[in-house]
Amino acid sequence: MWEHSDKLNQKSETWLFLLQLLILAVVYPFWWVLRFHRRINDLYVAGEITEQAPGSPLNEVLEVAEEAMNGGLFQTMTIFGVLLGCTVFWKLA
Image 1 (tube, rainbow, N blue to C red):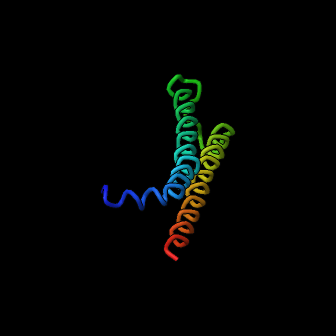
Image 2 (cartoon, one colour; image 1 turned 90 degrees about the vertical axis):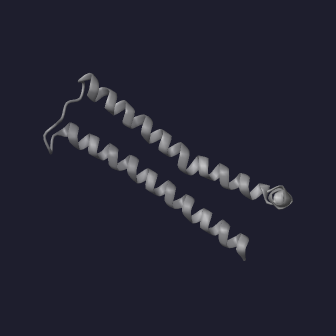
């Protein structure tokens, strides 16, 4: 490993960029969504939210919130994947 450390130092800017991109585009959004899921779960456990019949207004609001969170995660992961792929192809070319 130490034999190749000079190559890693030359590419450290790329690795730092990819690490920052990973944190901002994948880790932080997952943490954000898990935090909101925990809030909803805490409300459910405390009895402030009960299981609703399909089509009820509260059920619709919770479904919209879940779709928004999952859609946001999908978009950030897709963007991260595209940027990671572009970086890899750029470095290989």
